[in-house]
Amino acid sequence: MSEQKVTFKNRNWEVSAILQFPENFDASKKYPVIVCAHPISSCKEQTSGHIYGKKLAEAGFITLAFDASCQGESGGEPRYLEDPALRVEDFRCAADYLTTLDYVDENRIGVLGVCGGGGYAANAAMTERRFKAVVTVVGANYGRLMREGDYTAGAAIRTLEAVAAQRTAQARGAEPLITVYAPNSHEERLAAGMTDIDVEEAVEYYRTPRGENPNSPNRLRFDSLDKAMAFDAFHLADHLLTQPLMIIIGDKVGAFGSYRDGYELFNKAASTKKYLHVVKGASHYDLYDQPQATGEALEHIIPFFKENL
Image (cartoon, rainbow, N blue to C red; front, side, top):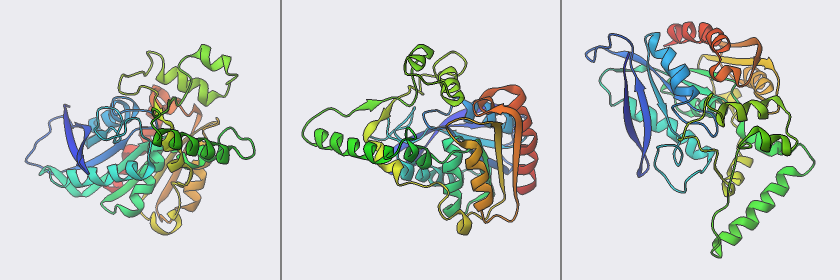
């Protein structure tokens, strides 16, 4: 198996991606391909590309893992922007690009997303009909998570008021505010009193040698939070999400909510072929890179894509 760095256009910038190929790849043949989307704050070199993308390529698919616009090695301004509309458009641009490759079977394109990338993948598939099968791995509804904030009354409104004040300051010449997704260390996390399993393991995955990568710098443009607040990844899934759907979650439940989001998406999706698999004893971040948890997930994902692509 080999891989190739590529780019494709979104508006007037280049989106950076990794194509991974099956063993004995033959460019004169047609292959099914799976677009792999990274979690919020992540990059293509982490779980989406080098765990799921790699294993799916080993199973005979071409995979395309990309960095979100304005993040990682992709172009786009302003940097560190997390804009759901732009993230969803990245998927459509990925499909555009794949249809230009002679060795891609354009009738067998699937999509897989991890965490927030899973929510975006499901949302994109509602209107991007070139995606013929959808997999979410601990898929999370980023808008729902942002609206809940710190789980106190009025948290979302307080955040929106703060964003409004920041935008006013920037309009008058202030520098943009760049914040973080998660604490930068366990010491910082404990000092803030954060003990939830998802927060603890986010630090462990992103800020230690376990998964850290320079293209995932834990930086978020604060004034992009208003865009997330009004976004619902699962809105209209009961009408528009009709493709075969596989949902993978773990039953160690944390604050990010992928367990309940998995059930919500499963119950809401209009898909007539839909499956939900719970990996027993697995946390949200176990399903990013831990061999036992990801191995069990892939035991379901690979046959699902083989059947539906």
